[in-house]
Length: 94
Image 1 (cartoon, rainbow, N blue to C red):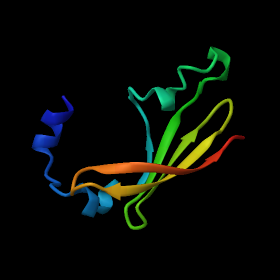
Image 2 (tube, rainbow, N blue to C red; image 1 turned 30 degrees about the vertical axis):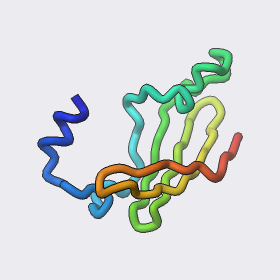
Image 3 (cartoon, rainbow, N blue to C red; image 1 turned 180 degrees about the vertical axis):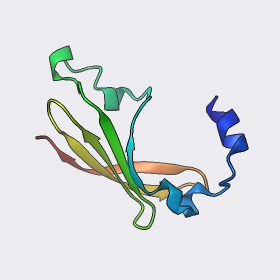
């Protein structure tokens, strides 16, 4: 499904588009590190998870809400005009 959506996307170089900038609610992921599936259930994120993206600085931030409000920031390293490697460099546990 993701590949089909990418094929009809009018923005052919998303890393050059300001439309990617902003704070986005994460609605779906298979990332076990974001979902914290190895934590005991009562320590997993139970609220919304957001990702804030800044294309100008090539930075991103993951933000957990209830109950722990943890954050992680990362550099976005372009691999091509559509893909980045995410290099986390800062973690805050609240």
